[in-house]
Length: 363
Image (cartoon, rainbow, N blue to C red; front, side, top):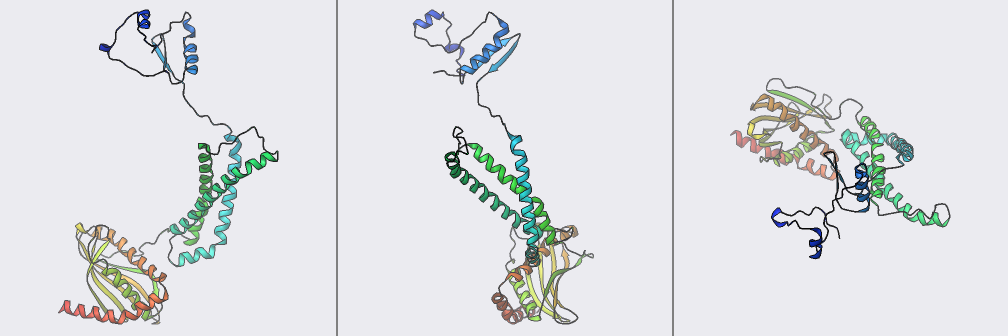
């Protein structure tokens, strides 16, 4: 056997004649060759490296030393033959996904109406394309395994070309197919998100700005009846009560919750501490359900009044706070009629409880 990179310490080495070492049964561990023709020294080193596997070959000439060793390398051939078919396949997938987007315009509009953001709708399309890519790749691989012997028996495929089903190239091929499918879905994803919100806004933003220490924020939500408005306020009450304790991952913490009515408006009032809590940002929050002039619908909004903390931190933190409330209103839309009815039925009792607690705090 041939060993490589074996090193010995100087104190462990004796320099003796070759014949004496051979008489002791010594083995050859390295060979130094001085050719008669120095012009062939590099060619000799290359020839030895091709014959001896795993052996280091050093060749030195004119104060330069070159290192030769036989190793494994990869070289790709035939990419130009599959480049055009890949482009054609990508355009076919692109056309199919675009057709799917336009066929589902009404479905996308429904998703947008129930509160899904353009990012979520694009994510749905991406998830669909991932499923298609994985299933298509696996089916193609399976059909190749099953179809190969059939094609050989029919004389369509040459039998002298063996197929290696366990090769790493199978993984590379499947990965390329999946990647082409996903890349072909990027533009349809963008078009789907544009259909969801046909504007430059990709997410909900607060439409108003604060005036000194006060901020009125309208919410994109309307209750059809007074009873539903009360049910929503009670739903929000439970949400705020679940945030009564400061947590590291919380956006806010509440205390001193009250309820009152003013000029046909239903109002939920509380004191809120905003994250980051160490900044000491405290505000008074009014969640309002204001009756429309017709008196049938109720529009929701938030009134904020800064009590303590830096103004800049107060503005930044309230963007997350307002968005949390908006998301809760969207969750209300997704509740079953039975759950909504339960909140609306409990509303009078909870309102009475809040009023009693408020009177005790004020008293």
